[in-house]
Length: 242
Ligand SMILES: NC(=O)c1ccc[n+]([C@@H]2O[C@H](COP(=O)([O-])OP(=O)(O)OC[C@H]3O[C@@H](n4cnc5c(N)ncnc54)[C@H](O)[C@@H]3O)[C@@H](O)[C@H]2O)c1
Image (cartoon, rainbow, N blue to C red; front, side):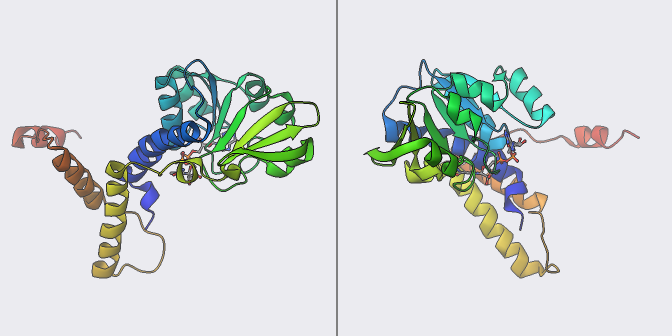
C-alpha cells in the first residue's frame, strides 16, 4: 500500500511531524539558537514545507533551494527566499536537506560555506549531504558533542555534520510527535486490513479514500473537534453541475 500517498500521511507526518522533529533534533544536538540565524531548507516538498515553516516560527530567516519551478514558486509565495544551493551555501547557518535525492549539498557548496555552519539531513539516507566530498576537504573529523561531528577543513573553517548525515529527527530527537504517528500507523494498519479482507491483485495500491477519511475523522474525534456536514440540498447542488 502506497501509504505515503494518503493525505493523512504526507500532509501531516511529512509536513508537521518532520517540521517539528527535525528542528528538535538540531536544537538538542547543538543547543544553538535558531532565532536570528539563516536556515537553508534544501527541497520544498511536503517535508521541506514543514521544516521551512517551523524554522520561520523559530525566528530564522529562511532560504529554500529547489529544482522544480512550481515548488520554487510555492516557496516564494509562502514568503521564503529561493536561490541555487551554491548561493545559499554562502549565507546559511543551518542547512537541512529534505529531498529524497543524493548529493544535494556537495562540491562547491561546501567550499563557500561559513565557518561554523551546521549540516543536517531529515530527508532520506546519508547520501543527501555528500560526506565523501566533505571528508576530502577536511584534514580531521572530531566528535564535539553527541551526534555532532566537526569537520576541520584544511582552509581553517569547521563545518558541523549532525547524526553522520542520517535522519536528524530520529537520531538526535525522538522522531515525530505521537499525534502524527497515530495517523500514519492507523493508515498502515487499516491498509493491511484492507489487503487481508479484499485480497487485491499483487501490485502497488493506493490507500482507499474511505480509509484516509476515516483516519482523519478519528484524529478529529480524538481532539474532540466536530465539523459540519453537507445538507441534502447542498449535496444535490454540488452534484447538479453538468
Ligand atoms: N525524517 C523523517 O522522519 C521523514 C518523514 C517523511 C518523509 N521523509 C523523507 O523526506 C524526503 C522528502 O519527502 P517529501 O514528502 O517532502 O517529498 P517530495 O517529493 O514532496 O519533496 C522532495 C522535494 O525535493 C526536491 N528536490 C529534489 N532534488 C533536489 C535538489 N537537488 N535540490 C533541491 N531540491 C531538490 C524535489 O523537487 C521535491 O520538491 C523523502 O526522502 C522522504 O522519504 C522523512
